Amino acid sequence: MPLRRPWNTRATMSWSAVGLLTSLLTLPATGLAQSDTLHPVDVAGTEHRLNVPGDVRVEKVASLDAPRMISIGPGGEMFIGSNAYKIYRLAPPYDQADTLAEFDAYPNSVVQRGDYLYVATTDALLRAPYRTGDSPSRDDFSVYAELPGGGGHDTRTLAVGPDNRLYVSLGIQGNCSDQYIGEDYDFEDRRGGILVLDESGDSPTWQAYASGLRNPVGLAWDDTGTLYAINNGPDHWGYETPREVLVRAEEGSFHGMPWFQWVDGEYQRDDCISSEPPRPASEIPQPVATLPARSAPLGLDFMPQGSMLPLDAVTAVHGSWGTQPDGSAAGDPATRREPRIAGIVIDAQGNGQVNDLITGFQDEQGNRWARPTGIAFGPDGALYFTSNSGETGLYRVTFGDGPVGAEPELLGTPNDTEQDAAPSS
Image (cartoon, rainbow, N blue to C red; front, side, top):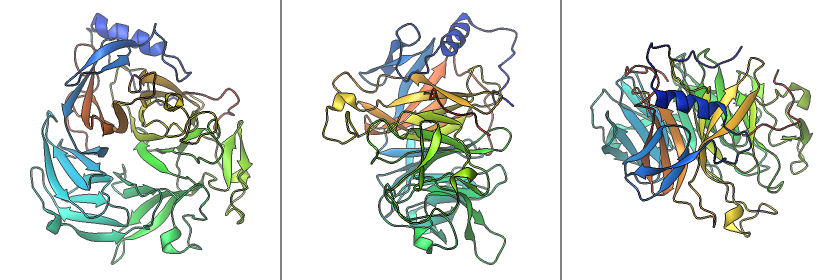
């Protein structure tokens, strides 16, 4: 069934909101903004402009050092990890940040669950007692569960599921690393997918949830409780192939990588790895949606209940380091995939389409003033995203006469379509 939330049915709707809806409904699915659907606006708090639909406003609300993933706690506080080894907390209206603690390992993400704050570093899940407004120090955090560590893709995205369990995504080390989330692999090589924490025993242990994803940075649940992951594909196929994928990450699902890649509407064997695939291509579910190769989608979030935006989800697209024609870093920087905020629509058959929502982070020469990284809707209905490069910090996007979405209340738990893509099963 279609995932799109019912539109806000208040008796009054501003003409600016109507204009925004019209603009969004006509957004291109090409990955390239068109002048008749997106228009430039000043970004408050900066000297830059972005291209947006309708009456959308963007402002920089806080300067942060290399911020990454965003989460909203049950008390309405916002938590942000960083690759500056700091974790941040912002209370509403999210315009002033407190540095809670600094770590000696990379805290990509931080979440609150109950009376604890959890931090995912590259090789461990840490936790500290926490209640809204507390100020824990680094010494308050202790190791709750080890994580498979190692180099390469060293981010660990932590999220609290609707079942109140802790989930973490982690990528394989490189393009073709023989790593897999399975008991036949050593603990340090159980990478490339999603783990879920089993806390039923004397000590918490990680269990396989979904596997076969090279670098699934973004995790989010729709309102039916289904988990989605957005993946960064390999670099060794060049600039155009394979496309980045959004997948429905069901318990036990295998998504092929690094043994198989989604190319020309089917899974093809990748000969860069010689080991036997743990499961055949026939068991791999088709992607929900795709983006151009090398786009690097990172943060992912679904629309809040009551949103007027005709979208199901949004993703923060970081942009590529690879250039045309061969995908190496040696080409013209102007040919790199552009950073952007993209909107995702999923139809009744489960097929997704990715559209430009906000562009303009990269100029015609390839210079970038910001790169979207984490993304989340706040309790106020506004959309927030981080940039960990250029003008680093937290940005707020509001719609029409103000934030468009759910009434300000606490949340609790939280492209481009290939022409030849087959329907999702």
